[in-house]
Amino acid sequence: MPNRNSQFFLLSQSLVGDGWLSPNCYSNHFDDPENEPGVYLIVAADNQTFKKGAVAYVGMSHKLAQRLAGHPVKTLVEKSGLWPMVWFKRFPKHALRKVEREYIQKFDPPLNVMGKKPKAIAL
Image 1 (cartoon, helix red, strand yellow):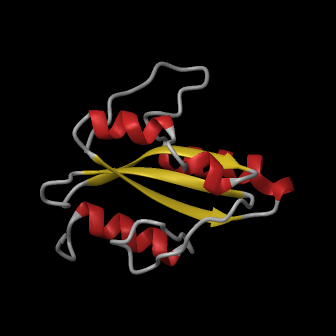
Image 2: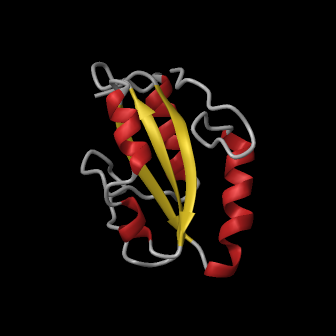
């Protein structure tokens, strides 16, 4: 479990404070995404110490549960030796693109690559 000053803990607390939920059982803010509209984050975390973590990808979907099941970015994060933790927030369909764009600008995730070269996941 990360200590209260670790990068991963602080990121998680920031997400919780912003209303994000997670289907991962290690979150105290657990919820299952239904097939409903929302924005999601895939956070890459150091799965040995859980001290480091960063938002690796921001996406949106009209059907969150369906989109997150077997998401290719989760597999990519796992292959890099990190743990992919999923977070999501429900939004109405008409707001998805705008909200997704805002979070991409906020986090500058390395695996959102439209129009640019992918970056390595750095923790």
